[in-house]
Length: 247
Image (tube, rainbow, N blue to C red; front, side, top):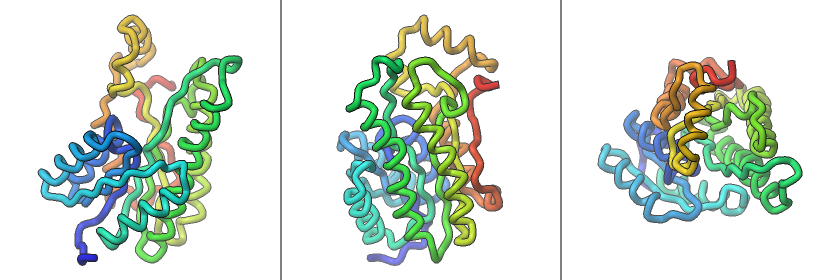
């Protein structure tokens, strides 16, 4: 293990979308990055290559965050490579929309396992590593945690859980100089939005007072700000980034 002067951030679900944007933005801020992903090797390697172009070190780590042993192995690999971890961005998640009477057990279990258990697994392992040095945990939530959206009962429940865990973990970890905050994005232009019909997109935009969708880069900017010294005294908070959708 080489001595490492750069701070290190782990971003889960970092091969695309918001996670990818967060990984690249934090690299721009001078962090070495552990890029977690679950399936797409090529996309993860692309993100690592971009991070290295920025002059930072990158490590791709394949792990299903809902699997505790896989998460433990991931953190061991990160520690072996970098010797430290300063930031965890809990981002890996799934969206399986369904109305109540259409929810199936497999989908329900998958959402709970990844969106809730996965966040706990990673936060627990990160906290163990940050106990002596302090650090920052940023949970990616959703505006659906504070706004009722038809068909998103399960997703909303998981993101509401993320908000609650953010507050509780913040209180538990504050004496260790570990802050825990969350960012709750609204409609964001990512690959997932490409699957939505144009007429539905137009309907969504009408509901946003600012009249436009946000970008993954804007979410990443907020995450990076939370990782900066400017927010060292803030913990347990959920920042809603939705163009006014939830007002």
